[in-house]
Image (tube, rainbow, N blue to C red; front, side, top):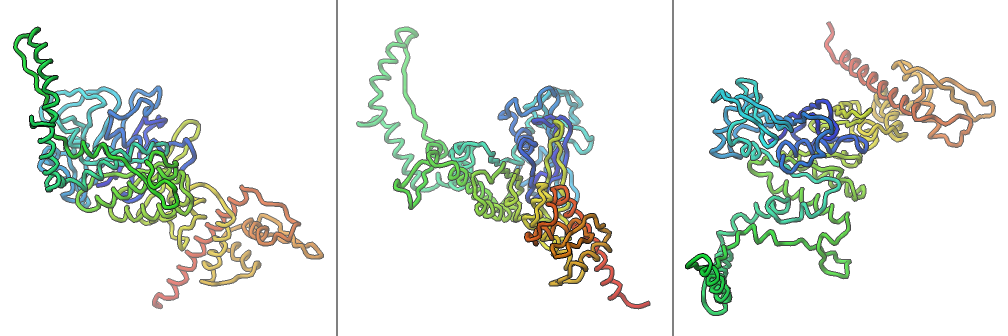
Length: 501
């Protein structure tokens, strides 16, 4: 299962409708602080869990907020998740391109919709999940459906400012609790549990010596006597229901020990922020790994996972998450770090640029990272395309790639040849480069040649330093030249290999 399309309006600053397709693998959302990246996770969270959504989720002053999502399933996947109850939702599924899809919606305002079955109006509130009827192309609110729709997918999100207790808690609704519950689902069938229950009965239900019932007899009799005086003959008994497995697990705690520490074990909540966050991220990976077999409607989300992690740890996490998505898990990552994008699969994954301009949020798909004009996606390319950060390292990388695009691999061109080849690609000379020889001669060059000379010849102090705008122009020129040269080379190769007329 994955979310194939997401639309929302009125979620934390998005005053206009925002709509985009999602990859079934990894989706990266990059942008500056307060650009609206985390709001994407908030929108999905609201769609599934309205009761847990705070008021600040919605855009102030906007009365009509909503979220719509298209859920996509492999054949029979939804049936495996819902079991027999799939029949209640069957008519709402569409079938095309080998996938089963269903379109759901939740909105912040009250409304009325018409049922296709009864023809009667039905009042809806924020607690209702609406489902699109493919036959009528209208949203409906069938009785009992919201709970089923929630079962189709769940979320496991870790926010940048989240406390470790939200995930280390062993309650069934928490991340760690979900993992433990799945792994210990058969514990009640084992002999140790049966022995435990027998001991519980002997201690709490028996009236023998040393039991709880024996100790409470005096209290029960006294309470019964007082109530009988006021209400007539009354008898009080204290009963203790045998505990459920999950109730016992809820009382568990997480301890961490490090060989270099003097204290062997320490509660996780007493460790540093970096250790706590590392635990949450590792836990998310384990949850995803353990659920990779069989039907799963879980969407994983990480908000600024690089926080408190050094670059090497970020690279390791990026690689691990990439492997999880390769195993069929949909992952959403909101990040500021190029290291988190290092393991990107440009053929499958998607990178979205999130911007905020004059109070308006905008999400656009970054297509240039999906190009083939570079042999691989480097950190330099990620910094430029995803984070709008031009670097001299990227210029050098493009400069070398241009040479290979013109003359083939391992080619070395003279500066004069480079200038001429750039000129043939339509890149104009716009700067004067001055030699630091005795006669101080100067000659016209393209801005990319000028900057490269400035970087590689620091001994030459005869030229002015380049600006950031010029660096951007130089990178754009080289990208354009590489594309032109490769297209020309491919054309020449095709004409050479084609049979003569």
